[in-house]
Image (cartoon, rainbow, N blue to C red; front, side, top):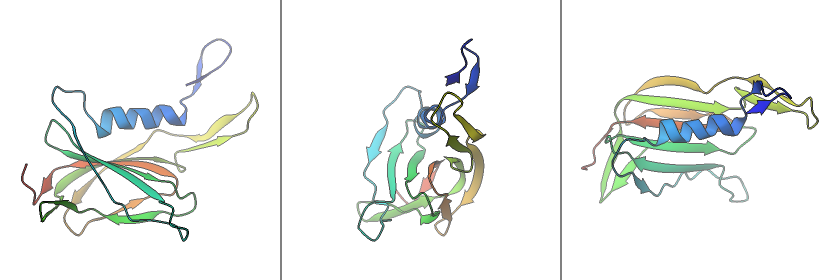
Length: 155
């Protein structure tokens, strides 16, 4: 958090919002084990650099959560999510909680004592009724968490 000389909070910094998303949206603090899985987003620039990095977790509450980081500062990217295991393919089904924080919510200006964020908004929270055909859009320069039930895979 950015504070003034008296300790009054001026801005919540970008890493504050991203940290809260990781610790409150992607994983859970309930008892139990989180299972991490490898992910291949397959979105690259012309030089072969990954533009989208993603991480999957099966949470103790049985829900799946994806943390998706769109490092492309100029372009949004559509993604369709497939979960694959042992030859089976699963998909988000039903309500998927979507939380996004990116350049539409937060832009830092300046490098001197008057530096500030504008806009300085919290992450955007929504719900999508998902199926195998659902395409999620990752806004440019953003962090997104998708969390919900997956059908088509056995536990």
